[in-house]
Each structure stands twice: as C-alpha cells, then as structure tokens.
Length: 146
Image 1: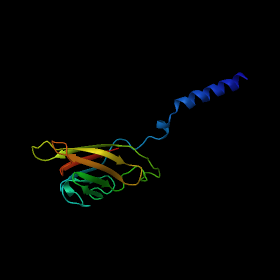
Image 2: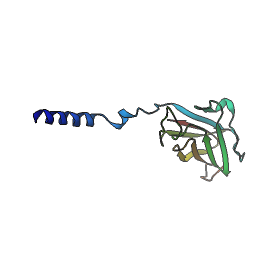
Image 3: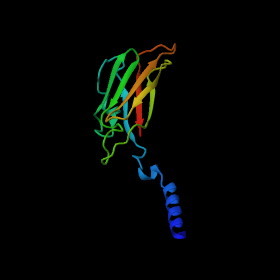
C-alpha cells in the first residue's frame, strides 16, 4: 500500500511539474512580417515597396495593403498567421504588432485597432490621425513579431 501511495504521489508531483508550455515550445520570437506603407492614398490592395517589406514565409512577397477609407488601412501578410502549418501544427492566435507613422514634421500618428493571427494569414487594421485627431491618410511602418 505504501508503494502504491508513493507511486501516486510521484505521478502527481511530475504531473504538476510538466506544464503546457513544456509540451509545446512554440515558434520562439521572430519577425514574421514588416511593411512600409508608402502609398497612403492608393485604395489598393497594393504590394508595398520590396526593399522595405519582409514576409517570413515568402521573404519579400506576400504582403499587401488596402485603404478602405481616409486613414483606414488593412495590412495582410500571407502565410504567417497562427493557423499556418509549422511542422504539422497550428499555433492559434498570438504575436505582437507595432505601427509608427512615417513622414514629415507634422503630428500625424497611427495605431493598430485590431489584428488577427488565427487563420493562415496575419492581418492588422490600422488607423492614422492628424494632430487634430481626425482620420487622415499617412504613410506608416508596421512590424509583426511572434
């Protein structure tokens, strides 16, 4: 009986020690996508400038930007979402997104409103504003890191 109790106690200790993060090490931190949205009034979708665009799956291609209204954009990076297959597994939603307005000395700024990584592709909804707080077309840089 003591042996059975000891085995059960050992199983409980080992079960508590092994966590989900140990079972699935994840992708690790890496740049998945970045773009320079350099054509702020193009309704798109357009492919951003190749020297200033990167996609971890297709290297320089696979990224697009669509302007849906004044100061409102959708950035899409094909193949780097959490639903993509990496070694036969899907990763689900996650990651980190940064966006920065790019340009002259005006006080425009941009922000990420939302993003999604649960499907095969990554997408981010970006809005840009002028110094008065109104939506305005602006160039911007976007970085997606997992």
